[in-house]
Image (cartoon, rainbow, N blue to C red; front, side, top):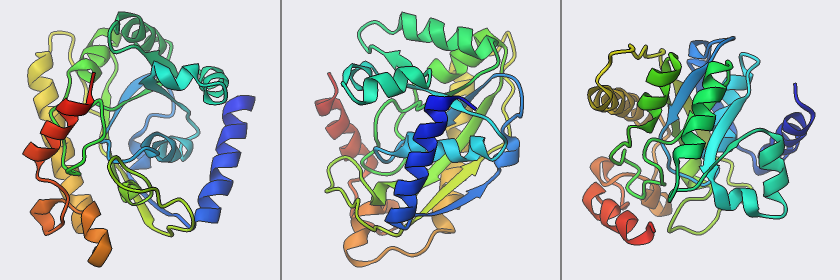
Length: 242
């Protein structure tokens, strides 16, 4: 293990224990023990990246996440992100980040990607960008779908933080690797990836503890919650992105 990454993991586990978070992971065996792969995740909370790494640790792997360059410019998080070999993304000039990710995949790394590119306030899947599939195709590696649920109850966009003893279950489900052929249609594969992840998301939601009262704000309208419907969430997202 790498000293900086190992230190951050140890610290994070201590924080999660103090918070009383209860992690439930399924499908970790779908993450390859060696070789590169793109891990495509849904995005519902600010700490998704830190929770998602648990499934890779189950098989002795580390994930290099693609994250906004602002995080790398912070005086505290910046050195840590660079030390863990995560990849900064400048949305106005993403070619460098893309190339760095493809090179890392070819070198056998796991690269974590949020195809939605931002947090979904409806807690349903937003439209996907094609970058995850394009990287996998170019690097000759599979895409591994991953679904997180419950992380929105700790801290998500548009809601107050619930950092002290939230004591909520965090579900993480990893699907089987999706091979991406060298001649694959990137747009069609991206649609197929989103469809697969939507099916996984619905299954995880159905198996999660019932949410009631004030927690209904963390539940999609489709399931009787008070989160904005997807169309409204997309409008909010468009208004917030540069």
